[in-house]
Length: 200
Image 1 (cartoon, rainbow, N blue to C red):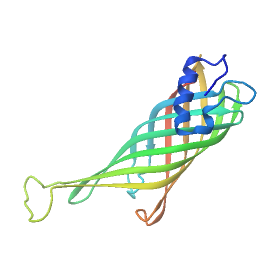
Image 2 (image 1 turned 90 degrees about the vertical axis):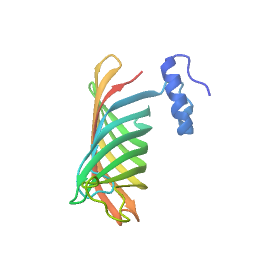
Image 3 (image 1 turned 180 degrees about the vertical axis):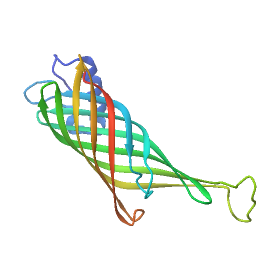
Image 4 (image 1 turned 135 degrees about the vertical axis):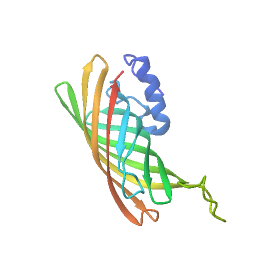
């Protein structure tokens, strides 16, 4: 794997890491120019993948590379939501893993981006009985847990704004579709994120 001599060492390292996941991105452009890398780290909120109500909140990180008007990358997030019933406290912890592809357009100090994410949402559900310390029910566990992996598609639009030198801010939001037997078909939701951006 070779890169143009003018590329920064950080770009070499990040692009090599990304190429392990998305091999076609491992080479420099045919015209010898450096890839445009973007690293995001911030917060994410979304409707839960399986729960019908509530809202998850957590952290996210994304790595993408741009070639002309196109971008490719990966994103991961971990978030959590809690709901209560008359008997249980229900906690959903979600890890969303996405491969990204999209288009972009520069606008002054910012870049407008529309990106599609494909991947899985891995969900852990934990249930804890409210009255577990006071009531003993034969055959009834005080705590229960289960795992599930749900296929998902995200469509996000957003803006990456350069603030100072290599640093900036990003805001993204858009609809999410989870589907499969666990969700009894299609389960629509939304996701949004805000992040600090580094473009080495």
